Image (cartoon, rainbow, N blue to C red):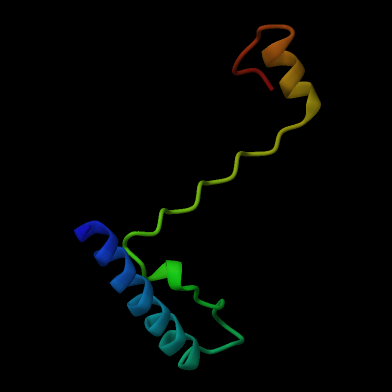
Amino acid sequence: MAEARSQQCWAHTSALLAMLANIHRDSKKTRVFKPADFNPHARPSQPTAAKVGITVLKQVFVDNRQGER
């Protein structure tokens, strides 16, 4: 129950912090802040995988060669 209360409090606080940050930001230089940017309970987003060409995938999965490009 304590964890849920902490998450609820941070949801409110992070929404206020995001609103204040967006009010005072330079819209031409910075991105829009989201409440998740200020919430310590929010999970960080997963980095996207690097995109590679079909030849690299063929080398790794069909020819069993690694490290060659």
